Each structure stands twice: as structure tokens, then as C-alpha cells.
Image 1 (cartoon, helix red, strand yellow):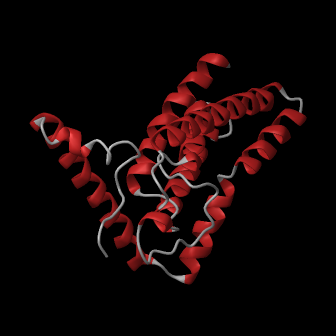
Image 2 (cartoon, one colour):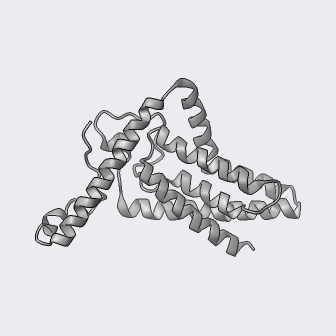
Image 3 (cartoon, one colour):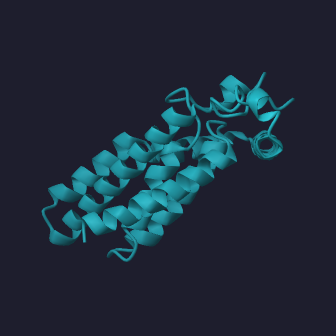
Length: 200
């Protein structure tokens, strides 16, 4: 399976212009090498595929869906307990900021999903949109984990454990490349930190 169509939109077209600029050409070559290795890691994940692992990965991905986070946040707010309401507010703000940041970057870089970019590759889950970089599920989940760090009822460690599982599930299911998940985690961490400032 050959790495193909891995450059973000706008870079492939600039390759000819960069040919006369050694520094730019070297930068594009390094980026292409990183993206090719990213694809190889994704394809290598296939060796771990199995029925029960796939079921677990799908459950984790469903847990990281926006509808799930919304339901959990509303349920916390509905208790009208101060601690729970604080959790719900931080969860909601963190998740919203993480998802929004991921969508902005996705529609700026336009990296295609693995199933659309790699010939013969089939994902084990339906793609929610056409773009891959970064992972919105991961960004939202990590944002929640950071936003809830230090909160009562072990909310921080539990949400971090869940965020890790969600991130791994996205690569396992073939919905994202590993680099998408890494970038989503970084965006999510920033969004979670912002949520802590917004909801002190």
C-alpha cells in the first residue's frame, strides 16, 4: 500500500514553486516523510483488529460523540448541586471550545480521511465529515479531561482515562491518522485550559 495524497491542501500545488527554493523544498520533503510515516502507523494498526476490540473501540468513539457530552453536561446541570453544576459548565465549555478549534483547523488544512486518501483502505466506522486533521473527538475529550482536572469524584482521572481510550479508538477504527489524534490532543489541552479560566 503506497502512501498517497498525504499533503494538506495547498502544499501539493506549491511543490513546483518550492523547487527553486532549497529550504522550502526540504521542508516539503520532510513534511511528506512525516505524513508517509503517519500513514504507515495507521495501516500497521490493522494487525490488532478483532471482533471484541472493534466493539470496544466503537463504544469509546460513541462515548466521545458530541451528543454524549451534551447529555452528560445537561444531566450534571439538572442536579442543581453546586459541585455537579460546576462540572457541567466546565465540561460544556471545554468540549465546545475543543470541538470548535478542531473544526476550524480541519476546514483550513483539508486533510482527507484515510478511507478517502488511501487506496483500498476501509475504515471500521462511518466518517462524520470529509476532513481528518485534527481529530475532533480527541480534541473534545482531552478538553474535558483538562477542564475537569482536580474536580471532585475523580472526574479528572476518569475523564483522562476515557479521553485516552477515545483517542486510540479513532486510530483503531481508521477514522484518523495518529498525527490527527496528537494534534487533537494538543488543541484539546489548550481548550481545556481556556475552559478552566472561563469557569473558575
